[in-house]
Length: 336
Image (cartoon, rainbow, N blue to C red):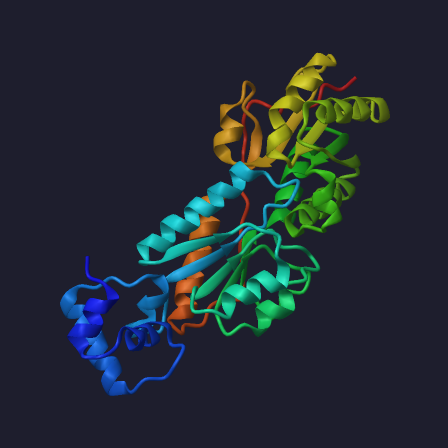
C-alpha cells in the first residue's frame, strides 16, 4: 500500500509538505502542489476523505444530520438515511452520519473543517434554532423538512399538511362524522417538529371544512400508552367511527386495542394512516394510507445538493404531492 512517505520521496518533498497539500492547513507553491498531485496519480495513492480535496477542493463527503431525539421512529429515519447513502454513492460521495443532539455547535464544528462538502439536515422544527447558522454557512445545505420561515434555505419534503387533509377528507367522503388523529409522541409536538405540526393543521382544517367533530391525541409508542389512548377516545367520543394515525409504531397496536375494546376495523371503525406503504400493506388489516416517500425524499435531497455543488440554481421549496392508496381498513359509516 502506497504511503504518504512514498509520495513525499517521489515528489522530492517532505511528508509534512504532502500533508499540508492534502489538508490545506498551510500554503504551498503551485509548482509544489502540481508535483505532489502528479506523484499521487502516478503512484496510485488513495488519500483519506479530507485529502481528496487536492484536485477538486472537495472531500466528496456529505453530512447527514439526524439528531436521534426521543419520539423519533428510528426504522423510518434509517430508510431516509439509506436512500441518502445510496444516492450519494451514485455521485461518488460518502456520507457522514451525525446523530447527536449537538445543535449549532456540532454543525459549525463539521462545517468549519474540510471534512464535508455539504449538509442534509433532518428533524426540522418550525422554529429551528439551527436556521441562522445554516443560512450563514459557506457550504451547500438541504433540509428535509420545512421550518416556519424557510426563506434563504433549500427545503424538500412531503406536503404533510395536504396528507393530513387527504386522510380526513377520505373519512368524510365515506360518511364519518366523528374522527380523531392519533399522532406522534408528545415530545415531538413540544419540539414543534414541522411535519407533525403540519399534519395536525391539515387534519383539523379538513375536519372543520367538512363539519366533522374531531380531536388530536399524541401517543407514545408503548402498548400501555396505546391502550390508554384507545380507551380515552371511546370514552370522550363514543360516536367515533374514523381515525387517522400519524405514528407508524402504534398503528398495529392501536388496531389491536380497538378490537379488544369491541370495535372491528373497518366494520365499526375506519382507519387511515400516513406511513410507509410497505407497513400499511403488510398489516393483518391492510390500511388505507398516504405513503411516506422516504426513498424519493432522500434522493431529491442529494440531487439538489449535487446541483448546488455544481453551481446550478435550485428551487428553494420542493414539496412532494401526497398520494392516498385505498385498502381494507376503510368503509362507509354504518349510520344508526
